[in-house]
Length: 283
Image (cartoon, rainbow, N blue to C red; front, side):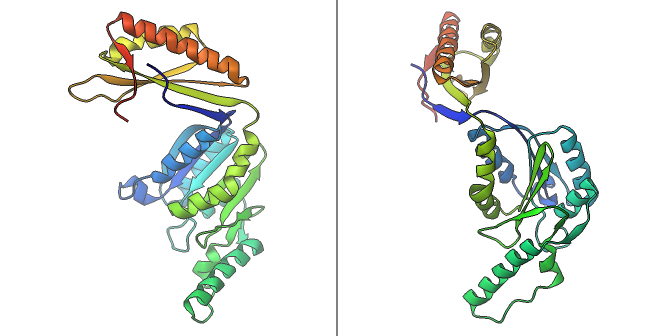
C-alpha cells in the first residue's frame, strides 16, 4: 500500500534566511523561526537554498547580507535584531551592507508611536514618551519601507534591491509569524507562478537504507525530473524508512503520472530485495 500524503504547491523561487542573535549561536534559544519560515516558504513554492545564523554584530550582519546578495536569491528574509536594546543591530548591519545611511522613517515612527499610544490607553497611563531606544525601532536604512507589525511594536522592513527583495522581520516568533501572514505571504505568492510542487511518500519496511541507496539512484537516473530522498524513521526492533518523492512542474496530470511511475519502480525494486512498502504506521 502506498501514498498517504500529497500536497500541491506553487512553482519555486529561491530564498535565503538569515537569523540574527547570539542566543541562537550559544544554544540558549532554539531556532524555531528558521524552521517555521522554511516550512511556510516551501508550502508557497519557494525554494529555501540556505539558512545562516550570525551574531548580534554589525560587521557580521553586513558581511552575510553582502555575501547573500551576491548569490541573487529572489528573497532574503532576516529575523531578529529589530528591538530597542543595544544588541538589536540588524538594521545597522543591513544599512552598512548596502552603504546606506540610517534615518528616522516617518511612516515607521508613526507605527511605533501608535503602538505606544494604544498601550497607554489600554493600561490607563499617561502617554509613553518616544525615547531614543523607542525611536531606534523607526530608524531604517534609506529607501526602506516599514511593514506593519500587528502584534508587537517594531515594524518589519522591506527593501527592493533590483533582483532581490530583502525583508527584515523581528525575532519574537509571534511577531515574525504575524507579519509574515499579513504581508510577506502575499509577496511570495505573487512570485510562485502557475507551476506546482507535487510530493508523495511511501514507506519501506524490513530493508536497510544502504540497500535502498542504489535503488534510489537508479530510479532517479531513469526519471531525471523527480527527486527522491530517504528518511530513516525506524526503531531498534524495526527498520522503517520514508521515501519522499517530489517534482516541480506545470501540468498536474503529467506530474501525477510521473510520480506514480516512480513509486511503482521503487515498490517493485524494494520487493525484489526482500522489503515491502507499507502504510505509514509510525506517524
